[in-house]
Amino acid sequence: MYFNWKDKTNIDELKVICNLIKNSEIIIFPTETVYGIGANAFDSAAVGKIFLAKGRQSDNPLIVHLSDKSKIEEVAEDVTEVEQKLIDAFMPGPFTIILKKKPVIPDIVTAGLDTVAIRIPSNIIARGIITYAGVPIAAPSANISGKPSGTNIEDIRKELEGRVSAIIDGGKTEIGLESTVVRVIDGVPVILRPGKITPEEIRAVVGTVRIDDKAFKRLNDDETPLSPGMKYRHYAPTTKCKLVYADNEAEQVFQMKKLVKEYKGNVVVLGFDEHEEKIVVSQGRYIRIGSKENLEEIAQNIYTALRKADTIKADIILIEGIKKYGIGVAIMNRLLRTCEYDYIEVLDCD
Ligand code: TXA
Ligand code: MG
Image 1 (cartoon, rainbow, N blue to C red):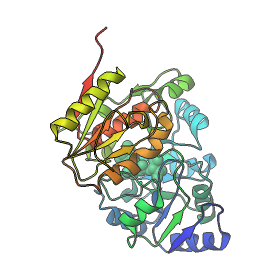
Image 2 (tube, rainbow, N blue to C red):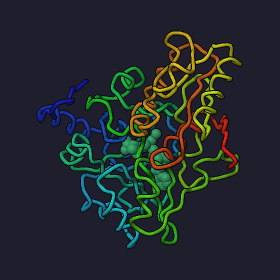
Image 3 (cartoon, rainbow, N blue to C red):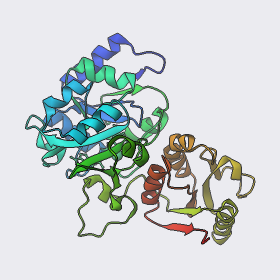
Image 4 (cartoon, rainbow, N blue to C red):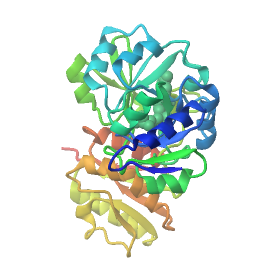
């Protein structure tokens, strides 16, 4: 079933969706970050269908989505003062907090961990569904495991149609990158997955913040990340990708051109709007990711651009990198993993 709620939520269709959720079915719905594949979080059989639909490893836990803050105590306990401050500052919104789990949440949701990831989306459609379904909704991003998260319905239908009972179209997602995932450890908020809520914003609320150093590093086989999802290849098209960043713009363009030449033009470039005339490739092989001055726009476009790049036959996808600041931290975290850490970085020494 396909429902178009781009302009308005249809109440009769909302009832259909809630019935599907009650009947252990799974649905695709929009949030402000990326689309999710949702099921009743109390229903192990339904949650099992999500893992199947995505081809997701069972040791990778899901986020539990709630309609409002008053519901947190139903699924989590022992919330500390620092955790409460973060909840009050950033929820609802693109923010996920790891809390101590209550037994009502089945093990399949949390991959057997004693913690649960909680998020309250701000997107109206997402909140409407969670509110009317009357249960928390467990939902990972809408994509086959390893692929970029779904941020528009066209991409999602191509990848997941037939694997879920209903797809709700809420238009292109507002942010385009997954939520910031935070766990408070010894009173310090640790960012396990960077996102729209930046380290700077978190520090402003509780005075301190740390980014899990594994967010920018390749993990060794024997390392266990705090966030299980971080160990898998992710956000990646089938074609190999390479990321290029120089803190001097002319140098970045130079490095990109050098690579285009090295690969004899058999490349796809994911580049800034401003560089299209400078990094010359043949027709259709330059995919604009947005203005270099507008990181929000780049975040919105990046997954759609990666999927588009994958439809073009090429030896490599070359991607322009950005400064790791603000939402740039999250974009670079995703792109490094897209490229499996195949990364050229040129920094000015002075
Ligand atoms: O924006 C988002 O967060 C989207 C939308 C749909 O809400 N969801 C999303 O879910 O990105 P997913 O499953 O693709 O990513 C969830 C991440 C994974 O890296 C997972 O390992 C981590 O959160 N996670 C979930 N539960 C956890 C827990 N108890 N402890 C540590 N990490 C956890
Ligand atoms: Mg995901």
